[in-house]
Length: 74
Image (cartoon, one colour):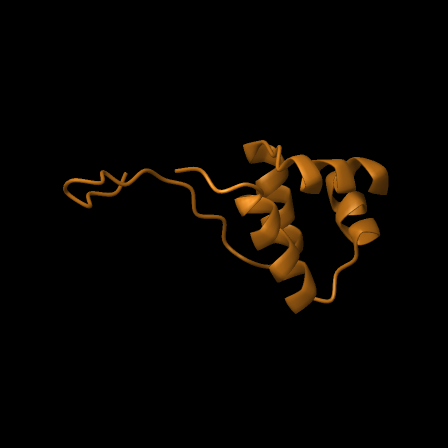
């Protein structure tokens, strides 16, 4: 089951923790604050954007797959 805005919610949580504004995030991504708000609303991120965000927020980005039946992670 997919959860709406899952990545955007995580980004917002870390932004609060790091005292970062949407404008700060826009500067990190090289786009307008309006574009950032649209991305947050639609939860439509690509890996390059997520890596830039992680770098700016001073955190690791972990992307992977986990098999449900065996709990193996890739």
